[in-house]
Image 1 (cartoon, rainbow, N blue to C red):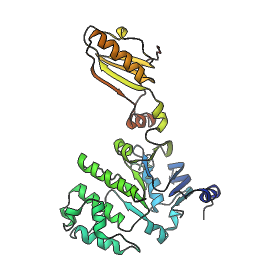
Image 2 (image 1 turned 135 degrees about the vertical axis):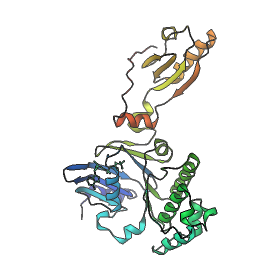
Image 3 (image 1 turned 120 degrees about the vertical axis):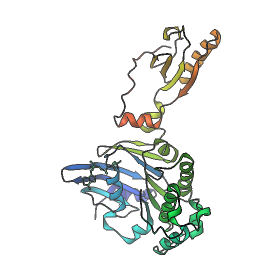
Image 4 (image 1 turned 45 degrees about the vertical axis):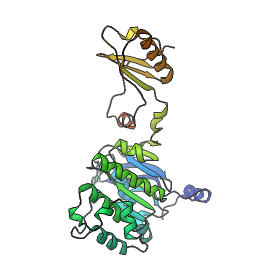
Length: 326
Ligand code: ATP
């Protein structure tokens, strides 16, 4: 059994984490896929693992699901070591893989009922169907469902055993925008039921909408972890003020504003500022006084995607020169 002395002490002071990982390592021969990863997931949270292809996400998740063995470090899922494959753990964890095969000639209700019988405790079939919003498809055969409806059936099959923790692997890949919104609302309702959700996704808006915390993995390591709004100092990053200038006006004509930088690309101005209210006020007042039309005026904070791309080295940071004016 692994020894986790500090974690054990914490258990006495607060509710035990749903997932605890410390210095987790996994090598495939010479390939070090996971290089000493540590994090905790609190009960009831939606924890999201993000990262580019090959970052080590699947390896990490599958170690937690008990499908792969680790090379080093400690892992506890609902207080149990997933490597031991205990029945109690399998009962309390629901797993929704990207693709799972079901008997496609059975109906939605029949499949959920069948899966329910595999579990010691199970949620009533119609309650599960309602939860995943498949009521109208209750008596339809699995093979007749659309891709999005199939994914919701997969979720239903993972939920029927009343798991405390659910692993969702890219739950909305291939969904149309409306189906994604619907899936998000289902996932949120899982949290209302007190479930813990461990999510992997490639969609930043999904992480932004659903996650209480995100961890960004790259090359086998966690390079940032936190609330989506605060990740890597996102909340204190400069805001971006954008607008277009009409012909005849240049950057030098703009008023002095507190800014990190300002740049002009064609007729498009970008001002980076940590004081967006004051800067926007000065720029708009200046324009109004002169009756200048500023096109497409917007003020925005960096998105989670901006931060993610910066962290994973997929985009160069903004190179405009620094300039401060008050
Ligand atoms: P993706 O987003 O593409 O699914 P990932 O973040 O899930 O990527 P992993 O699948 O965990 O990444 O892979 C991490 C590294 O481990 C990669 O370099 C991959 O080639 C390697 N790897 C994964 N599984 C195996 C395996 N069974 N045998 C050998 N190498 C593997």
